[in-house]
Length: 325
Image 1 (cartoon, rainbow, N blue to C red):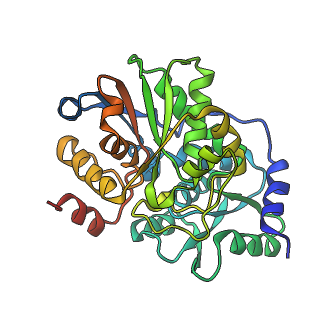
Image 2: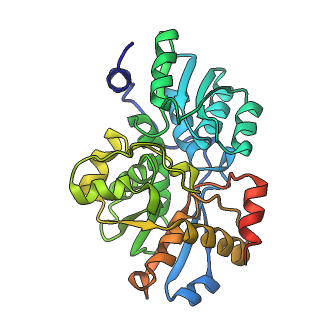
Image 3: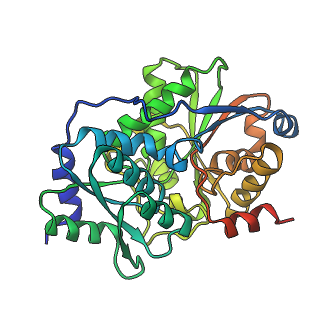
């Protein structure tokens, strides 16, 4: 068997370098002001809402970029759900097909979305076999396919860079931009887009689940640290083993801080965003606002952009969060 990490580096080194970070199918991010929450927390809070993207998350920016610029007609990927949905839809627009390696514990709403858009799912029990291992097996079985994961790919970063540019183009000068962080595709794209736009005084901060804090540990140690198993945080989009290698290179040189957020704060953030703004944020998407709830004093009298990365959450889970008193 080809070693999975070696295989990824072979595939990614062969990736086309000509990319484009904006497409007709990708919507500009929606900015939502939050005066009541701002008054409550003593900071000017504006949400960059990516739930209005096709398939309901920022991942469509990345997936569309991959589907548009690889020559292969079959794409195989690993994802807990949002990238899988986005890639399935993007491939359908391009007349391509995709196969998704997905944990058996993935949210049903995301499973349904993949099937709706025509993606084929390969479920894996991550307690017995890692997603990367199954992905490598499929790569051997499908030598003509293009292999990617959901974040560790230059095409992913290039696609997500457009969100950073959208944020930088906002008339508000943000002191801080807070981004959820799992594998690092989102935050590395945001950092790259803001840097290209020369908003040098804007500080990007990561928000990571406390029980899935490999990125925070890595940043503090100055080397890439991985989780031994996929951490079962409520923020399912952050259930990654580690940052991607491409993402880590951007994070380690450009990110000052990652706030570790308890799951209880994530749950509270989902409810508060819905109660005050009627926005349906999935737990991973609410990480950025949960970071403010965790470190409130840090953001006093500052202008803060909180990225809501997606809104795909099982209805039963969402109802339990917003009804929680």
